[in-house]
Length: 153
Image (tube, rainbow, N blue to C red; front, side, top):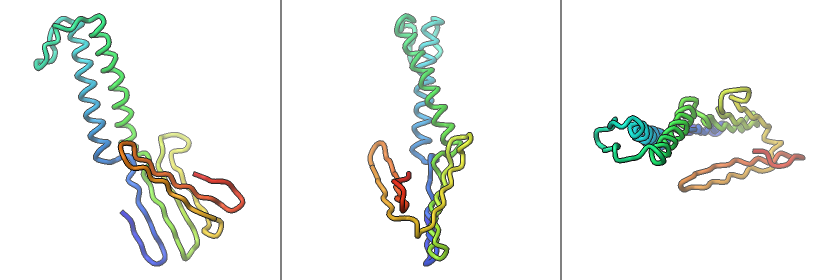
């Protein structure tokens, strides 16, 4: 989404609340929960999942490894859910031609630097470069070169 007029241009940044992130977090949660339940059921000797006969899996070493994968997956999925909840990476870019100001705002992880707000005068900006990498791991980087300084991210 963006808003454009002759004087102001505002570009909204989606951040981590995207459909793909919801899908990955949910799939990872369900898969890791399944691994953990199979590992626990191999330890207990009874079937906790009715779809998979887990009595055939020995607790040592397969059950321990599956439990480890399940716990690790739960930690990673909880990290993904936290980034979605905090909406890390969302914000806006605002270019005001009349006032001659460029503002960049992003939400980060909770803590001291949760709010990242950069404000520059357009006359102080020498150049702006945007790198976009599409594919499985998309990445967008904004470089601004300020007069008399090096690149700032």
